[in-house]
Image 1 (cartoon, rainbow, N blue to C red):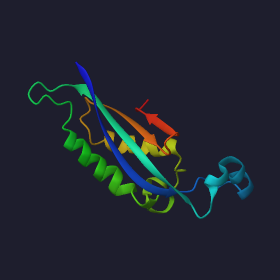
Image 2 (cartoon, helix red, strand yellow):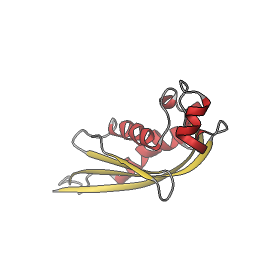
Image 3 (cartoon, rainbow, N blue to C red):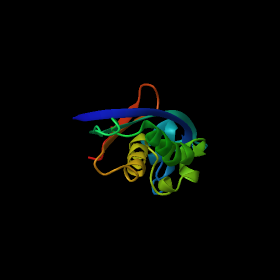
Image 4 (cartoon, rainbow, N blue to C red):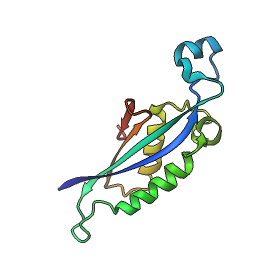
Amino acid sequence: MKVTVSRRAHFNAAHRLYRKDWNAEKNNAVFGKCNNPNFHGHNYELIASVTGDIDPETGYVIDIKVLKDLIKSEVEDAFDHKNLNLEVPEFKDLNPTAENIVVIIYNKLKAKLDSKLDLEITLYETPRNFVKYSGE
C-alpha cells in the first residue's frame, strides 16, 4: 500500500535571471524585470512529498523528523537568505529559474532518501506561481 507523506518548508532567497552569454537587450527581452542587475527576492514555499510503502514495524513511510532534518540541511541551510546566483554553488553556471531550483532541490533530497521511496517537490515562487518535479 503506497502512501504519500508531505512536509512544507520555507526559505527566502534572491536571484537574477540572465544569461552571461547574452547581451543586455536580449536578457531584458527574455527575462524582463527578473533580469534586474541588483537582484530581487522571493519567499519560497516548498512541499516535499515522499511516497512509499508503510513499514509494518514503524507504521511510517518515512519518519517526518528525518524528512524535516533533510529539508533543513539540504535546502534551508543552503538557500535561505542567500543570493542564489552568488552564494549557491549549484547556480554558478545555472540560471536560478524556479524550474532549475526545483530540480536542484529534488536531486539534493533524492540522493539522501532510500531508493525505494519516490519524491515529488512542489516549489512556490509566489502564491500563484509554482513548479513541480518528480525526477521524470
